[in-house]
Amino acid sequence: MEFLVDSIERDGEAYCVRGACTHGKIDIGTIFSKAYKKIKRFSNNQVESIRTENHRVVSLRVEKIIAYRHSLDSLPQGMSGEIYLVGEGGYNLNTEDTLASE
Image 1 (cartoon, rainbow, N blue to C red):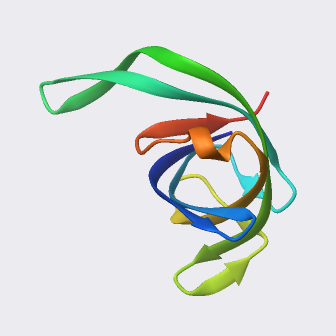
Image 2: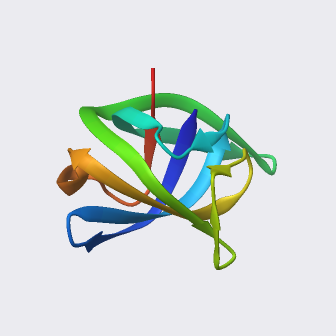
């Protein structure tokens, strides 16, 4: 599963990360284990992912999911929302990063 980061805010011990689920489904309790930046190429109105860089190890657990002002148990692929994360490595997240799990 993957989550594309649009913005990050510190919320006490948690990180409020806004973005979109780009692959798979994200559930409460999911643990993201890596973060990286996808490098994309744009041509002929198409986007192609050509490589990843800036790989980092994280251990961030999904504590809460909010979408359209509603608390959800999961965030399906293609849906945007806020995920609240606790754990290690949140300080190292940047906009346009991708969070993923093994």
